[in-house]
Image (cartoon, rainbow over all chains, first blue to last red):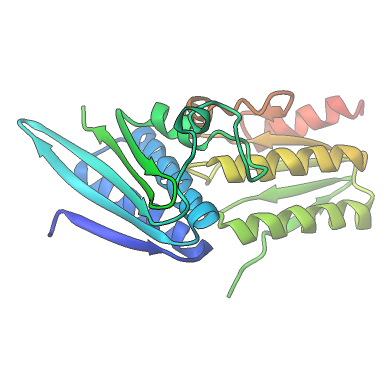
Length: 133
Length: 120
């Protein structure tokens, strides 16, 4: 599908590749510098989560169109251990890796829409969308 | 292939200008390099300029916050300069205030602030 590009997240360098892809697509769609920074940061957080917690997974960047609106959707998917307590990971400051615990609640604030689906043992799927205004 | 961030000495201060997107390893290497350089040169102030940086995620923010505290332990004050509007907005939205960090608009004002802080 032409409107979707993906990066496999296996090592730290793939985090850089994923956010560069996201930034390029955001630019193409006409997002301003602040939204580009929001999107790049969100991708970086999601890609790092995959690397840290699942070991590997995939980040896809989609151009989406809904009626007259255009947007960018980040799809982060892994088959890692999943998340036991979704409410807990959405709390600011909660981290099991010594990080700042800003990742997921931060991504939710940076993007317009945020969906998370995770089951222990089967992995995690996150969809985060930013609409062009 | 990995490039290290250059750290320049200016009198009793160190100057760092981060010119490209940081990957995790470069950021961690910089943390170590800066502390060694402070030790080596007995610098008592550091200015880290982020003018060319167009986003900071929670990992880079943590590395920066940590290196500022580590420098403080060694007796060196750090001023961060050149944070772009988009970076300031995304950092606050992420929930990262970098509280208690000395900042200035640009390198020039950063050096002034550092001199004031050091009482010179």
